[in-house]
Image (cartoon, rainbow over all chains, first blue to last red; front, side, top):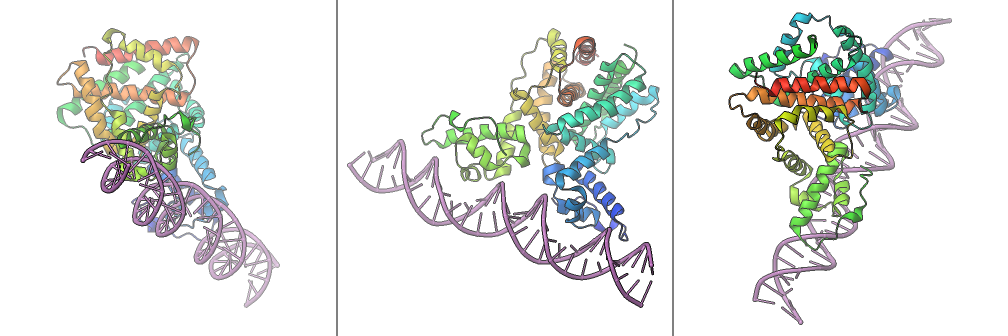
Length: 196
Length: 196
DNA sequence: GCCACAAGTCAACACGCATTGACATGGCGT
DNA sequence: ACGCCATGTCAATGCGTGTTGACTTGTGGC
């Protein structure tokens, strides 16, 4: 592709260390795949971002697909569900959704990455299982509702929906529309996480 | 790409008619882009699917990107917001979301198509404007709430979220979880479209 | 201080792609 | 019936890609 807005020299000059360069490549891949998607991301871009060489990627990861699947696993990783304050949760989320999606935020990149994976028929099932284990189950636990799997589902769906909306909206909401939006989103989320 | 499961000879042999072939190419592009995404879809695939020739595409659409943007516009097109019965709307949607995403359903393909566009930084702004004009505005009109732009936003976001959830879930919900899910989704949507 | 092997570099390959321009041809107006 | 122009065909070109193999260079153990 082109610019990932990352001066190549931010990468600290490593001594010869296979493990370190492997890790650097993997990190660069997570970023690049999230921003540009699988196909538009070339191994040369990733190598440049990692301050490494293209030829190492087939060698260390067995090819582009190997690198992608490993990046996917690393992205979904047990990333602990923050111990959110339940009384502030809905409003915090609403405020966040009213803002602009920040490309610099790693969470935005992670989400784009997962969304990319969701649109590909081959990676979608893999993603589905990972989401079930590492996303839905924790949410259900957080909700403290052993029987209510569907509540986690609904909450996750709504959450994802607002993330997508924010993504395609681009800019932050302003003025009256913002306050109204925040109010309504808060109410919706409260309706789900509250006893019902 | 490869197989779009469409025997090339299903395309009725046209007489020489630029408009017809243009339309055929556009239709094929909408299908192909929805299934395979922008990058994995080659102009050769589209041409084959349309029963046409590759070289006509740069000629008629000014290149691959031109074809894509036109296909995007055509996909978002004012696609009649069905005159939904307001009293049945939420439950109908909830039932739909509880089912499995059907790849054969053109609407599923369309949605995947749009989601693809949402994750690409280049196509996301374009999509944003299109959604604003052709999705949010009609919804607001349907809600009959001239001042409440944010309500359309929230409804659209939730709708999209459930579509994504259904996509990555893969299978249909069953039994008790299904009924609970439907109930809860119905309530959420009613909470938004109802007076609030 | 040297040596062997891991780690990194570089050039080249084969492939698929979009795009271009020159060529053939069907069909409509006269 | 015929000629002209829009319409469709085809081969060729240039570019970017992933991957490979041979080469160089750094570095830890002796």
